[in-house]
Length: 119
Image (cartoon, rainbow, N blue to C red; front, side, top):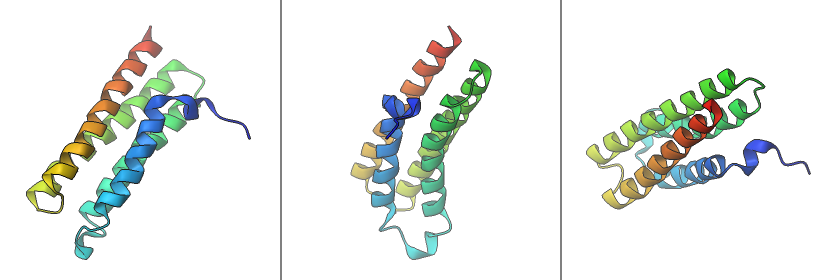
């Protein structure tokens, strides 16, 4: 089976792991939040990985950077919802810290990849 370029990127691999962890850690959120915070966290997290994959398929650097910027913006959205999840007692501080550290690492990787593409 062919492996696409994005699959080789550690930033995409880390985003993929984050998606899995997010689904696990939000499984116990209140059922009334299924279409609220739970959905927003899962969708934004999935968007990080999807935008990396789609962006790296683009021929031009301008398009690549646009999708990487979208992935970064989704990561910031995730941080927002993680903070709210702690405020609402949906997420333990321990799980919040673990997930937030993952997201921060991914944002650093996205910035480094964007810088590499610009140069």
